[in-house]
Length: 473
Image 1 (tube, one colour):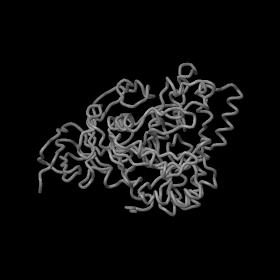
Image 2: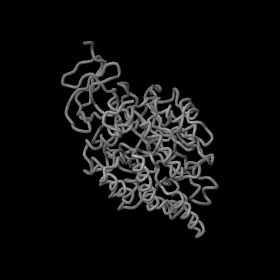
Image 3: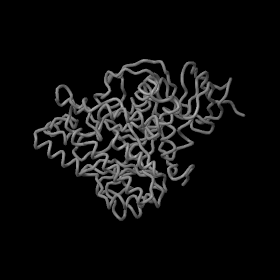
Image 4: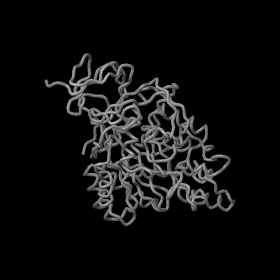
């Protein structure tokens, strides 16, 4: 047998099921041996470190157009550099179909944006905003067969919302083609009604975004999405779940054997509605505007319970970065007139893993194995990347994150690598941090700094395991 290219020695290997001391042997970008006393041409000493599968952030927005001309702060270069520095080796951004655009041309546009700029591997979800007969009858089935095996639909936002008939039509195609549907579940009409009421009452500060996007509207839309999926007999993912009310709908569905999966995000364990108040109800609260918004302490407690008990399958960042100040930013004249015009989204791809590790593993809320499942293994299984990605196993890509579980750091904007001019987690004290990220055995980040030229690839994906264990194309 030929010599190993690289050995990661002396660390503790952690998977979703186990942890054990072992060396990891790498050849030609893949893990080929796990054992003791391995010898290779090169060696990285991981003594005192955890050897984790590279993080997979399954919900990331990069270089995405907006309807109001606001500019997204991260393209593929800065976004994937930031992801690598935060311990991620694969991100799943969205290819957003603009109304009037074909799905195929949308995908081609995003490939042009990503080409040669990715420091991590990437794989696109589609966003279906115009379910025309051509899109549903020809383009979407062909794209699913080409490896774009998941797509997202919206139940709110004027330029993205699908009505119930359109949702059912899209679900029918997804069932036939065995594509996994991600649902942004917020009730559009309820949000519009509450927004009009609040504006009439003169309540226009960013804080009132959270009241307009009430948890009741999220609960109702979650139940409606689940009902549609039950009618069609389709597995779905309810994304960025914010609190107890939508969780109860998901748990209700699971108890009846429905194939409903769920995702939550750092903002729902690290922020609350009070953050949207800013400094005495001023515009600083716009830094925390996202949808669904952060809720209250009871919702945080519910989210933690769901992370422990399996209600949540995955923990993603929903990285949706806009600059706070400057041209085409959150702080623009129109946004100053009402919360409804504040661009929705906050950055988080680089801080996702440290926040969950520190608040979850270090504080005893979740196990180390559960951390790995939520942030790497389950996303790989759910989105058709397993076993190539998502585990430290012989035959898998050598995508690894070396983690110092005792390192303490304070999250500071000045230390981060994203394109934003702020982080909503400024000043948060963290224990546990990624110190080296390897993509197919090549170091792409070291001690919080990206390394080397872009070497990421686009990944075609298999059918989600939500359709059955070991699903293939």
